[in-house]
Length: 65
Image (cartoon, rainbow, N blue to C red; front, side):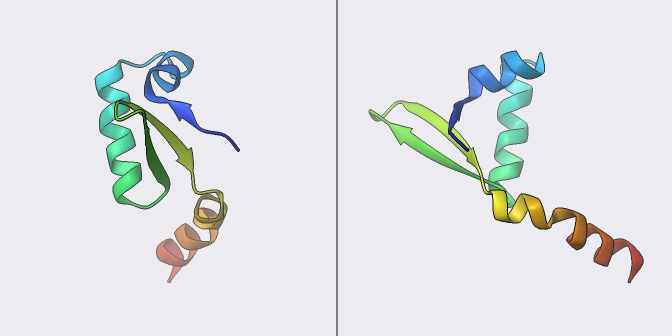
Protein backbone atom coordinates (compact mmCIF):
# COMPACT_ATOMS: atom_id res chain seq x y z
CA UNK A 1 0.00 0.00 0.00
CA UNK A 2 0.97 3.65 0.00
CA UNK A 3 2.66 6.00 2.35
CA UNK A 4 0.93 8.23 4.88
CA UNK A 5 1.88 11.33 6.87
CA UNK A 6 1.81 11.15 10.67
CA UNK A 7 -0.78 13.93 10.88
CA UNK A 8 -3.12 12.01 8.58
CA UNK A 9 -2.66 8.86 10.68
CA UNK A 10 -3.47 10.85 13.83
CA UNK A 11 -6.61 12.31 12.24
CA UNK A 12 -7.86 8.92 10.99
CA UNK A 13 -7.31 7.33 14.41
CA UNK A 14 -8.54 10.38 16.32
CA UNK A 15 -5.37 10.42 18.43
CA UNK A 16 -3.00 13.22 19.35
CA UNK A 17 0.03 13.79 17.15
CA UNK A 18 2.32 13.06 20.11
CA UNK A 19 0.64 9.69 20.80
CA UNK A 20 0.89 8.71 17.14
CA UNK A 21 4.51 9.83 17.00
CA UNK A 22 5.36 7.68 20.02
CA UNK A 23 3.64 4.62 18.55
CA UNK A 24 5.17 5.15 15.12
CA UNK A 25 8.59 5.21 16.77
CA UNK A 26 7.87 1.89 18.45
CA UNK A 27 6.60 0.35 15.21
CA UNK A 28 9.68 1.64 13.39
CA UNK A 29 11.99 0.19 16.06
CA UNK A 30 10.20 -3.16 15.66
CA UNK A 31 10.72 -3.03 11.89
CA UNK A 32 6.99 -3.02 11.15
CA UNK A 33 7.06 0.34 9.37
CA UNK A 34 9.61 2.34 7.43
CA UNK A 35 10.05 6.09 7.47
CA UNK A 36 10.85 8.17 4.40
CA UNK A 37 11.85 11.85 4.36
CA UNK A 38 10.84 14.06 1.43
CA UNK A 39 12.26 17.54 0.77
CA UNK A 40 14.36 17.25 3.96
CA UNK A 41 11.28 17.92 6.12
CA UNK A 42 8.19 15.87 5.26
CA UNK A 43 8.11 12.35 6.71
CA UNK A 44 5.84 9.57 5.50
CA UNK A 45 5.40 6.07 6.88
CA UNK A 46 4.80 2.76 5.14
CA UNK A 47 3.78 -0.59 6.64
CA UNK A 48 6.04 -3.56 5.99
CA UNK A 49 3.19 -5.83 4.90
CA UNK A 50 5.25 -9.03 4.90
CA UNK A 51 6.10 -8.63 8.57
CA UNK A 52 2.61 -7.49 9.52
CA UNK A 53 1.10 -10.53 7.77
CA UNK A 54 3.44 -12.82 9.74
CA UNK A 55 2.40 -11.40 13.14
CA UNK A 56 -0.39 -13.92 13.91
CA UNK A 57 1.98 -16.85 13.38
CA UNK A 58 4.78 -15.19 15.34
CA UNK A 59 2.47 -14.36 18.24
CA UNK A 60 1.02 -17.87 18.23
CA UNK A 61 4.50 -19.38 18.38
CA UNK A 62 5.45 -17.03 21.21
CA UNK A 63 2.29 -17.60 23.26
CA UNK A 64 1.91 -21.34 22.87
CA UNK A 65 5.49 -22.64 22.88
